[in-house]
Image (cartoon, rainbow, N blue to C red; front, side):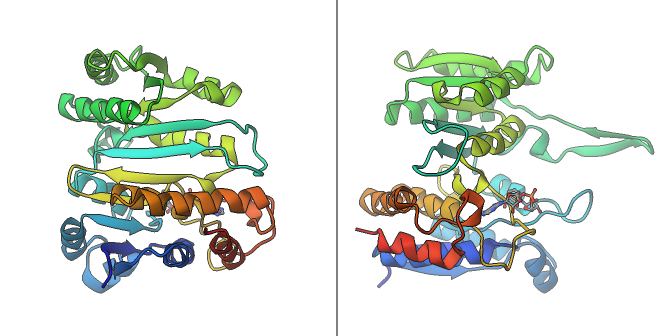
Length: 334
Ligand code: NAI
């Protein structure tokens, strides 16, 4: 009998390749999972008329946990992002994105240990857009007190539980005085309830400069949705690229684990995708399920694979295929 039931969304592009790698690693780590696979995106649209069928959302609610490959979103038209819809429909209000240096990865910095906590349901991603006239399009940046307090509380709780020293609220409240102003007001209010965690504020542009010049002095970054999205890719670049950084979308009842990166259409089907981000996301999933021991086993195997450095994928300077890298991780499971 499987111990866990997990909805599996293989996704598009390199999704199925990195999902397969992750399943192999979890099985080798002795984790028994009853996978519930579903198509979403284009495949689901063609089959059911919806890119995110209700039955998928219901099954994720029922299981409480999903592992998701990246899902492609049409640009400038077509259906709305399935990623954003999942986050909004399941109220996955927190996007947790640890960014850590791995040994042996050619990267700009070697001591990065950041956690990006991104509000996941509103901001410009609320999807409120309209045409004012033929030449003018308007998008609404929606910031609410409820969601801002909720994400700030999540960030300070996380910082306290994981003994992080500092939370930085990221904003542009000098220009967006009301919307980012409200986000900051909520961050300050919650910060005052956590005197043990240092609280600072940084304009998003200044933060980007700080991160590029001296990322090792940053800790937890509390971001509204859009800045969190952009800062995540920047931070991934500091430690060696998008192939390495995992993400968890967390709500009160449900959590969906994925990589920060997208479907990488430029390398899809070539067998060279780096599955590290999704494997690390699966370790976050195990920790969320309460299996800290298995989570640590998977994470240690990934770190050890990089330390040995014999079978690394091309995006981090190696020549290994996805399968060769996966086997190297399996060989490191203790
Ligand atoms: P992307 O993240 O897919 O790719 C950017 C670059 O990073 C590419 O050169 C790609 O080859 C490389 N890369 C990404 N992941 C990699 C991995 N695991 N191993 C090796 N190289 C990797 O971003 P892009 O091209 O802007 O987006 C492609 C599609 O993915 C779009 O349709 C976008 O909407 C979607 N997307 C989905 C996300 C999700 O499902 N959460 C997140 C971001 C984008």
